[in-house]
Image (cartoon, rainbow, N blue to C red; front, side, top):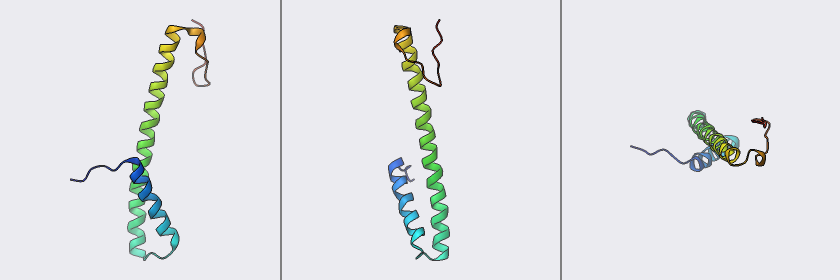
Length: 86
């Protein structure tokens, strides 16, 4: 059973694949296999980034709510969450 790679490891492998494909020295069958692996790695990295973005947005919302509860005037409005006096 293989374990899931880290984002950084997947990104490094994807960069290596791109370099090999761009070199133009890869046989057709190998290039196709590399392309398929590259797509897998791309989807994996994109999923990790989407997950991280969701977590960051959730944490930011929590921090803003805590700060607003403590002092509503101290929390600056953001374009995504304009200040609405309560």
